[in-house]
Image 1 (cartoon, rainbow, N blue to C red):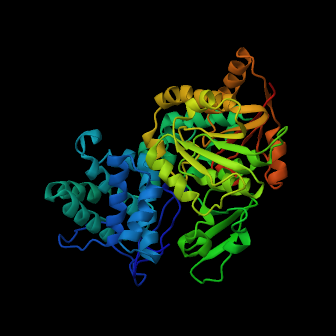
Image 2: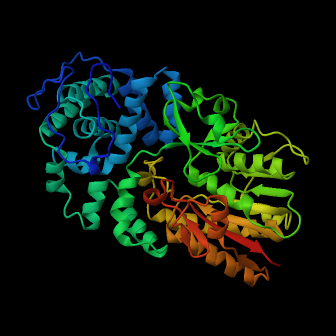
Image 3: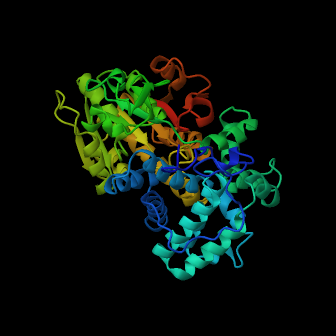
Length: 509
């Protein structure tokens, strides 16, 4: 990736995976000074940096998701090519590296770090990422960040940003980490070096152990979280094929997917340039997410197979894949979403899916916890893609590591159990439910399923655990090392997907 016209090539690796960056060089390859930086108060701030800052502020102020806000801003401000790539690297790099940068910056700020204005913090992180991870020349990193702070925050905050960043100039990342990170084999050291909260480090270590992996993989898993995810595309069955997504356009580089039979991987370019994506016949969707829907569709049910249900359908990726598959097989999908704005996203995702023999896909606004009581025994297949901490999708949603807390595990647990219980009630005997999360944490995966089986037994409802890895092997024979007992657990560092967990249950009575 390059930062912009005339600037040297940048590294896209996260801070935790780089050592010394060597001398910074200017447009002609000359070495630029690393000290004595004096930013010009009239420095012009390019639109790419403004977009990155706007993304960071939206994430902080509105709890927005960067992967939703950034594309909108890029389109609105008509940024493409190298400018869009620079804005993307800067915004996502700050969100991934925030923990590392905060630890470093706190040592050169003359007041408690937590007392700083959130906008100032984002500006400082942007400057730090350019200095330490993007090989932007020091003078450009400092001058543009100070000018951005002056325009967005005012002269006073800009002065603080200037003083702090000038204090940070001239030291390599390795030097900083030796000073502030502590030993690399401790939770604290791993937390700072890989920019993960300590509770996340501990949770992922326990998840590896619980699902049968060596805890020595932890460093590799944390590094994978800081590696930008490949853009995966999903061709909706009956509407497109992966071959339709391969393009001769010089602005695009698309190759076949690794595992999912509906997948292609976009290595370069804007997916919106592909006709199938523009027309809704294909979607951007992680391969792990695709496999969850395909595993449910491939499971064997006893008896009829006409009515399918997605109990937590927003924003609609899995619902679209299920709906298209159901239409080909003469079945019908009902999609339920509790939030009206997310239900609208589901409708948009399903717009290209034709009506099947039983009519068009039905999208309902409602509480999934109530469906089982309202429609007992009505469905043949049910997906519960439960709300979770999202710790398995930190590559694509890096802000989740700072937004979530250990308390969320206690809050989400009852909701996950209630949704799975409702799904079991909505399922007819002989039907199959898939319980899925984008988290590998034991409290959100195996323990939820265990409790659901016990709770159903107390109500006289029989549940049989299906061999989910065997079903996955039929869908995607190339996936290895994904078995977690009778469930499937995918990993970013092993499979290159989000850490999706899926378990299949058949209702027997």
